[in-house]
Image (tube, rainbow, N blue to C red):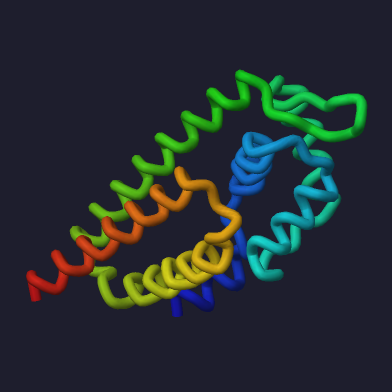
Length: 161
């Protein structure tokens, strides 16, 4: 039921994610708008296909906000201000995860949302695993820590049964 609802009201990515994705991509290296679109399609195995009508206006807003800049060759790169904002978003993401963990423990949403969340984590894990050869050592270490943390959470939930 929840899954059907999210499919009706949402796209393949949550609102606001595109902004984060663009900044994250430009943190790695400069890209054109088309390269950002192609990267998103490839990284999501075709599940997310951001349109030029989404990406280019968003690039314009990021330029206006001073988060990115455009070079003479038409590629965009992140500014120092953009890097600061991206760091803030990373902290927000960790806070949001803690809040979601708390809600899952306190509310009677357990199995119903838990199965959907597990499916999403599995898909994310498969995607990251398939791209491991392209990941930096730092990214691989972060991914390992994420998986270990998730395994500990599952063990903790299992021990409470």
